[in-house]
Length: 235
Image 1 (tube, rainbow, N blue to C red):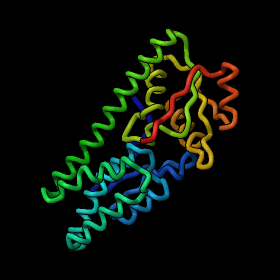
Image 2: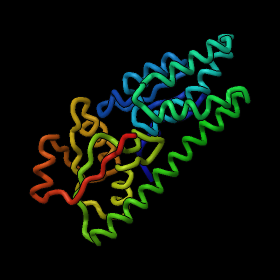
Image 3: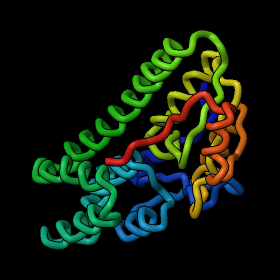
Image 4: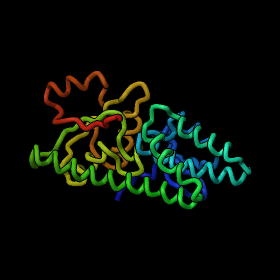
């Protein structure tokens, strides 16, 4: 059973986010009930990672609809609020994708939009677990039974997704099978997603790790200290 808290979920009529700007020194969730606070959370990287941003965007449309009812918004005001969520991080493809996926459902009502947003979250979690198993199988088919020393960069774990993780999810699956000797987590300057977030996740899961200066990764590979690298790929 994973000890990781949920990165993002809907609870008590609010989007509940694990505030990643506070990690690793403080584990704190924030309850968001307004569009402006959600946009701020996205922009200051309280929530980050492509899949997690997608879920934030989809749930954000529900949030906007709820706020619009409370504050008697016009259709134009609702559209503007949804646009502000979609455009909160212009380089985040998943954010725009998820908003665009649920937005056409708005005329069908809040419950339909909410169900679609929850489906996006569920599909992301299922895809992460499937990726973890496929990736672990691939690695073990290549290297056999020996424990692995793997390098990763930035953060592609639970914190970047709904749950489990993508590239780091493969590492978690390998660890669950007893096939990890050590994980080298690049510090990932300037925001230190590796040193702050990936190292924290690995520590939470009890997976052996070392934080590696970014400039040392090439030498570690060249000298045979690392068997391979697992990293995320941006679209």
